[in-house]
Length: 492
Ligand code: GLY
Ligand code: MN
Ligand code: MN
Image 1 (cartoon, rainbow, N blue to C red):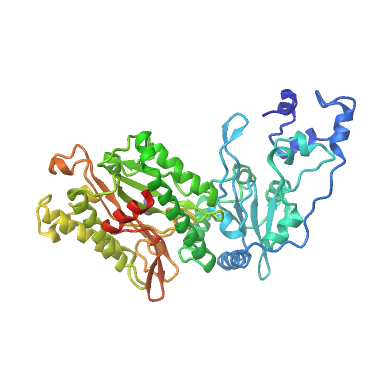
Image 2 (cartoon, rainbow, N blue to C red):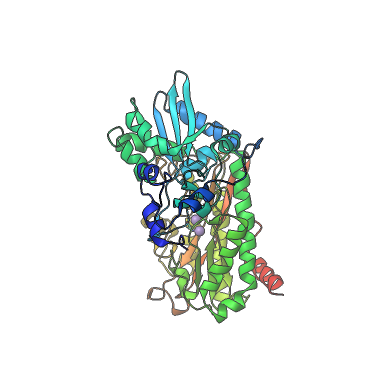
């Protein structure tokens, strides 16, 4: 899809704000190549005023304000710069779909590419301003002759509209690089999202100080507020519906490949949410033993298990992270069920250990102990269990940690310090996954042949409450017999 005259788009598609400024000025006497003055004049006028008034603030506006206030308290007297990020080119004029940086969306509730949140220090805190690309100017041709023109990419909010929706002042982002270059005083920025903003700050920031900002914004998200908990519940409920969709089409997947499962879940994620929160793992048969199986191009066979690890990301960017291991023909074999039940028991022990005041490591230890006990009982590793755990011998088959924080990122709060997260204590409002698994590789000569190629994981999203925990993903069955009857009811 190009402008009618491709060379016009080429010439007028600006690469910097300055170039845009110069290039989109109306030029007389046919100076827009291929655009008559008459057409330029026609396109500049005759448009209705569509400004929206009296908009209600977004649902999370009070929460984003509280999050910004906490950030302000942590870094008094410093200018803080938090960009949304830019579109990434896929090929020439085609971009990957955009997903705003977590820190920016967390602090603003906005998801617009190129947006930047700036907290300017004041005598008693900060003034927050959001910098955005405003609506396209119609008179100077930007509307239709610029690559970011609304004719091409759709209507944006005006700055006035954005102010009403987000509850903070909005300014033109094209003015920001210059403001930042000229600014004096200490500055910190979230890195890795907007090279243009980082270039404007290059002589003003240091990696160490910027990392402290990133760490703070990661740790701030360890305990979720009421809006976030509701979003995570929404994500889990949509995800449960996506799993049901998959069960209903397993016969079609058998006739095609794992891709049918991936596409089916993706449909649910796009219709009800923003996207999937991570690449769906649709692992049939021995692919279940490959932890990050996202190629999803394998055969789906009756008699095998399907390990489906997938999560819907809501429109406000909170994701679920759920795994179910399902018998493709609807019935577990005896051995599949034995392994499944061991993982189920490990998950039960893990979930029971998710309590306010417990250490983060406790639920991992509880789940690993159950799995080690079964591996010893089955004769796959020599006991006693204490020795197995001490030497970590069960890890040949358990492979990964039993869970992680969950939120806007699937592996949420990843920049948090060890003392606040991995060595930390669980608090009400934290949300984490409990996801033990057993994986017997196809070429593992240390286990009987019938175990080889079986992988089982069960993963749920657990909210820590004042008096225990709540399983946000319990709309999906977990016990083997419940899985079987649920599948039978869906397949009709
Ligand atoms: N889906 C990635 C994980 O479970 O951590
Ligand atoms: Mn997962
Ligand atoms: Mn997970």
